[in-house]
Length: 140
Image (cartoon, rainbow, N blue to C red; front, side, top):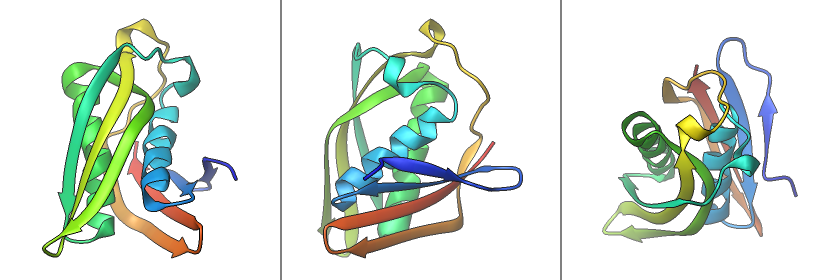
């Protein structure tokens, strides 16, 4: 199963990310988003960042999770190499996510383009037996 694929979209970037479970699909969505601006396979694993996000539902959680990475990119110049660990729990009707992201400083790498924001436009989350797909559109 591929980690992610890009789909046709007029002005923005649209992708689907896959996993055997929700955590893996969310991790692959973060990788897909960073692959828009750089080759994530070339990013060294120099820095660890603890990521926390929450949402009233899985779409809000996915949105907030990916926005957290855009914040790290803007504030710390952080590029993602991989998600080392990730955990999603539902506590009192709220989804909570904790993850450890590994990456490096952007100035060491060739980047192209910029991601302005994650959107709810065309966002989908489909969960089947042993397979999860999340679809995201980001504003470029």
